[in-house]
Length: 117
Image 1 (cartoon, rainbow, N blue to C red):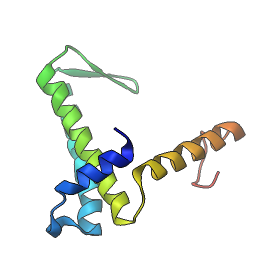
Image 2: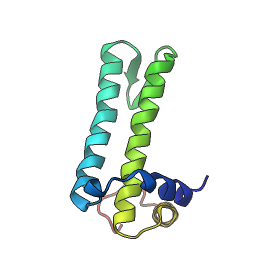
Image 3: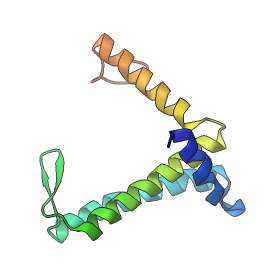
Image 4: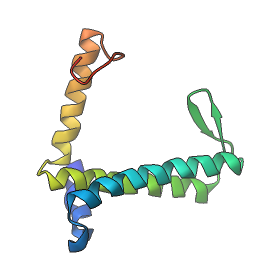
């Protein structure tokens, strides 16, 4: 499945009442928060541990791991929705991001400040 296929299929589940920019932006923020909450609860329940900048599954708990993937999927839905609201194909957004990162890497400015480095 391509990203554009995903975007098209995902948007068939969009309700008319939620087809607006405010819902899209706040929904994205909320879903990222839910993913972060899953990680926090995983640490509290000793399912995960954090080592420096890395998050590790302490043991393979299928339900917990699947729950994290579901939250990440919800984040993806809202990214697709936000892009759709502005008429941007998701593959175009992804390619633009890869191009930007490749250019920064080529110029040695991956780590730096500002959007236009």
